[in-house]
Every structure is written in C-alpha cells, then in structure tokens.
Image (tube, rainbow, N blue to C red; front, side, top):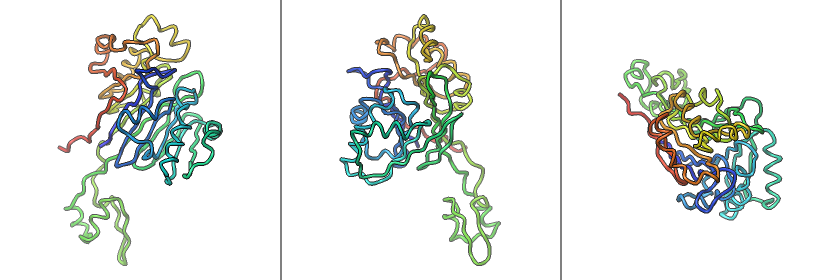
Length: 304
C-alpha cells in the first residue's frame, strides 16, 4: 500500500489558511517529497509527519514557491542528527540551485546526492518507488512526476515442484533472488507468474494541458493536477502565465482514465475553490477539491 498526503494546496505564496503545494508519499517506512515551498515544514508537522524519514525529494522546477522551504527542511534533518543519505531529483541546474539555497545550511551531518536530468525527462528506481519525470509546459523548464509501486506476480508452487526446485529456495526466489548452487541456476521467473497491477500517482502543477500528462497518467490510481482557477473567464490569464484551470485538469484526468483526481495549486485569489465542485463534477465525477493535509492510502487490487 502507498500512503499519500497533499501537504499544501496553494500556489505562489503561503496563506495563513493554505500552505504551498507539496506532496508526501510513504512506502514501507520510506518517504518521498515532491516540491518544498515555504512552510512545508509546518505543513508536515500539521499533517502528523516528520521531515527526518524523507529519503527522496523531487523538484518540479525552481520557482520560489516550489523550492524555498528546502534550507529549513535540511537544517531540521541535520538537527535531528540524521546520518542517512538524502537524494534530491530535479531538472538541470539542480545542484547549483540547492547549493545556493544552502548558504544558510552549509554543513549537514548527512550526504546529499543530486540526480539531475534534462530533455524529456528521466526514470529512477529508489526505495521501492519507480519515479518518472516528464516534461510539461511552463514558462521555465518544468516537469511532472509519476510515482509507481510495482507488484510482483503470484508464486506458483505447482510450477516450482514441476521444475524440481528445492523447497529451501522457494522463499528466496519469491523475493526476487537468483540462486546458484552446485547443480544449476534458479531464477524468480521460474516460479513467479506475470507481474500484477501496481499503483501509480501522477503529480503535475505549473503547466498548460499537455499530451505528456495524459500519456504518463494513463490508468493512474490518483492524479494530482493544478487547478489554479475555477472561473473560466480566467482562461486568458492562465494561458499567458502557463497555468491551468480546474476544468482543464478534469478533462486531462478523464482522457487518461484516472481513477481519482485531486486539484491543487490554487491561486491566492481563489478564496473558495469548493464553489466550483459542481462544475468539476460535471466533467470528472468525484473530483476532490482538497484542503491542506488531504490523505488517502492506495491499496493493491484484490486478486480474483
């Protein structure tokens, strides 16, 4: 299972009732954070989480409302005597930007590994998270992310018996280990069925609607997309500034075949996003217009 918490739902600047957009995912004790704007530490605490278990941070782009919370977060990790390596993933220029932000946090008791990418994106496999960065359409290089959790096929005991595989190896093979003994090599593929459907979350803000969102969000369990405004008369404004209306996000989720959609990155001028619930439901029924701290736990589908 995959725990999901949308720590904040705001864009541009934090408000006393709305933190900046940031997403926390938790899998088997490991935590992954996407974006870290001003106030992210407070949002973490308010939602009942700690910064110290965060192993991976993914940054969509380098505008202040997505990165300005990093120095304080890193300092808090250091003050908690963290020793484990932290990986930060982001577009080209990541190392330079984070080093600049770390002027106030130059010495930390843990290593930071920077994973930069460019072009159309990149893929990473870390701590059980399958991470895919993909290009979106903003006024600076900006990327969305999918975070997936794979699920192995079922163990086939009858097949293992038929292959003559010793019982003492079954558990190790089931957990993905290849075993060599004096007679032969035993591989997991000899006893495991086809891979089952896993879990997938897509997160994309600060963008116009793009085909990449539909492509990478295909059959997502949860899509979290920018809905800066709900007033369709704001369309010229969001087009000019490379953002997205709530209604446009709904159409992307519908085309991608997503199971669920959460909207986020609301403009500070959007005081009552819930007023548009009926409008978005008409386009993508069940769309969630969340408050800060919205949480869910995604479960694997039950086997037939």
